[in-house]
Amino acid sequence: MMMEHVIDVSYQNDSDVSDVPPDLVQNRLCAILDAIGVTENVEFSVTFVDDPYIQELNKTYRGKDEPTDILTFVQTDGEVVFPDSSANEHARELGDMVISLSSMKRNADTFNVSEDEELYRLLIHGTLHLLGGDHKTNDPTEPMLMRQEEILKRLGGVDK
Picture (cartoon, helix red, strand yellow):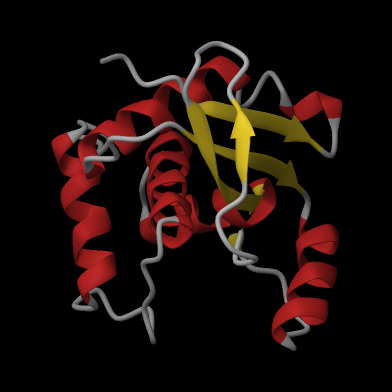
């Protein structure tokens, strides 16, 4: 059965659309959901923002007055089911993902990877969080972070 995920992609700055096209983001997220083994229709949003915006969110919701690369806001008020516009199925609302393109670009420089690889990594990271994954530190031996890197390699997102 074909999954009919509902993925809303938006941008704080319209100029970012050409850097990170919505169809690229949606295609990657569908591939990530398949790789993880999601067998139900899901709905969530991804918003691309700048550092000042994500810093304010990070300060408000996590008490950390600094920019970060990604924040996820998991839908936790029970399971809200929305009618899926393209099927008779329902989509489970997962929540929202917010990605700072400035932080993503800095990460790419810091870790000597392409911006494209870092984008893929953040999309996987956010998806794992929305599906209930968590990690205590950024140590690469954390199980969620190891799974993230395994998915990235499996999907061909790692630069040669």
